[in-house]
Length: 112
Image (cartoon, rainbow, N blue to C red; front, side):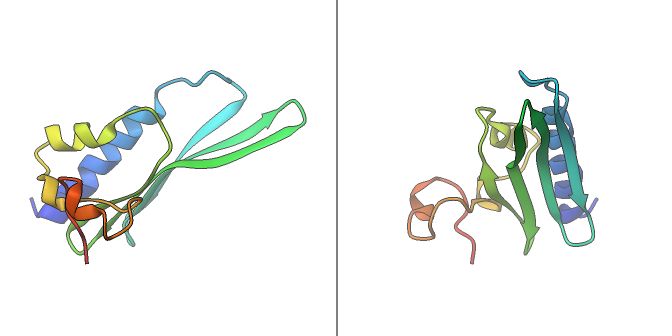
């Protein structure tokens, strides 16, 4: 299987597993957004708690130039470890939430 196709599959598997974890608030819906054509993958949380609207993107991953770009991880779950366990090399995972000048010190890929 082509590398990018494997990465797509792995990212979708990891996000699907995370989405199955039940949150504290049952009235908040967890949605999986998979744009396989443009390689954007997100978990979105939406709903209402009393009179307060909840909307957020706790996890956002892109696949660009054959690498996995973690744009956002606002969870306590270390899904990056799951990606590593699937065999994705550290240099193919970009922690895009870190500024480019810090990326060489993360132990992961630096991106372009």
